[in-house]
Image 1 (cartoon, rainbow, N blue to C red):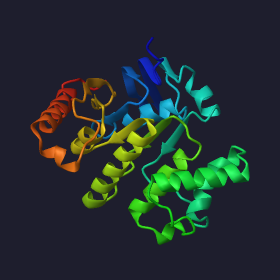
Image 2: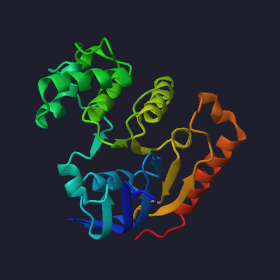
Image 3: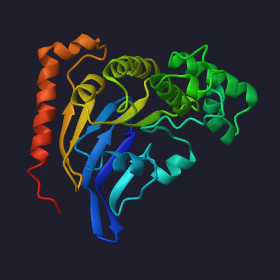
Length: 262
């Protein structure tokens, strides 16, 4: 019997009311994300990629349609700490050490002190930051700060990780390294990951499924199931299979511009 989807959206719409009139952020979004999927969302700025993640996280609420997270409403999923969220900026508190930044959600959730320390050690190992726990954010590079942010999102062991363009501000060398590390982390934890990006190579390299979105109002123009193996060295980006998927993503982005803005 097939397991219930981690995320299931049906005909999802979201309209923001503004002083200049309604803004249609999402329109008719239907999508299923299964356990263990790594799903990248790609599209032009303002197409609703981040908005969709925020709906999953109950930070925004749809105006029509339905969505479930682990079989429950996003509000219930948030109350049950069903997901971790990694933002574009690391968002670490500069007066707290890396360990204490990671500790924060565990303190809020009432984990015992001994369990907090065990979880912190575990996630520092996962993101290859053991030995840096006593450092402060300003003592780490941008890439290391983002890894600490990922560790914080993983600390309470939610099965869903939502990532809103976490590597967008980093240089290409650091970004490649973190892409490799994220794939390794995903492979070792079997988390379900929703990942927003503007980079076609990043989307193709990381994902089992790529969701291509149109300009506002955000619609899905294509959902591409990756045929690449789960084990992916960086040089897989030079293979015909990789380039074929990248071409389809590019075509999906072009097709999105054919929709009339509403």
